[in-house]
Image (cartoon, rainbow, N blue to C red; front, side):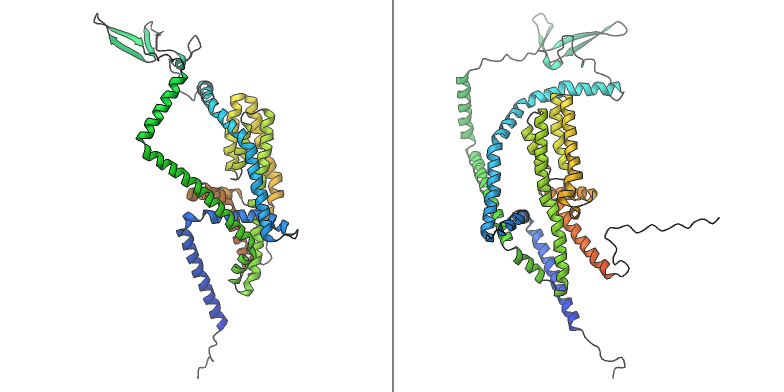
Length: 445
């Protein structure tokens, strides 16, 4: 007989172990499938985001005693109709502004090259930071620069010792003469021919037909690629909307399935994690969309007040780039300030101050009110998540980086709270709180 007594085997312990192993293996298989199929996951990711954004609107319509399927259709009609109406109203103006900008781009480029760059170089030389000015780089007496001259110029400059240095500015041609010498003359651009519309149309038609004959196969391929791209866009767009609708329609079943994977004693903790994650994601996703809209409207108002050129396009850029925290605001401010400088220094200063004011309002008023404390993520973590997301997944990774970081932070805080609750020494201590400073011994007199 065993002196230590019979060994008692706890059947619940073995069941818990098997359940844990099953969940771990299932999670590993799921991660492997996601990694292997990552190239086709974009519709599913976008569907989850759309479902998460539109669920509160669908729930609000449901409270009016409308069936959920009909509520989803109504929300889709309102949202897609509003987007289509906005595009219908704003697209012609935006297209006109873009066309005007393309026409004016050479003028802006010349202004930067002939005015801003020389001024910056002159200021650097005055501070002793630039090299000496090239003898031929200064303006001529008639005010024309080298790029404005027709042909070449021979310039004689007197040196300190009384001799002369001959400089040739521009392209020249050296041709032998009958007397055995050489003739040096500038190379001039051929004069512009008078505009002939009939000749222009004939040339375009002839070149187009010749190109089509030589590259018929390439043209067919380009057309096929365009048709395939458009078809794929509408297929992915429709598939995403369908997946989002199914997700909203069966959200209780989806959450119930994941809850059923856990043991009954762990389900209360699972619900608590869902509530925490929902608070964080609602602030990041829905709050960021609302902040983007506010930023776009305020940017449009300020740009229109000061008369900034192409302000509808710049306001649209500011709205879209506001989806990317921190970096989006910096990137959207650069073209606005540069275009302001092409008008006047005061315009550029006003635009810069206005943009800074908008983001001060966002940081101190909109973020606390719209996002709330549950969605606060340290700026260092925001920058880290943006860089990692952009590096591995491009633009999509940058857009989804902060929501993923918010979800990760929620999981981390939840697990830490569970561990603190089980630790008698840590129980009751707030998450993230600093321990009280250790009192220093007072020196004896």
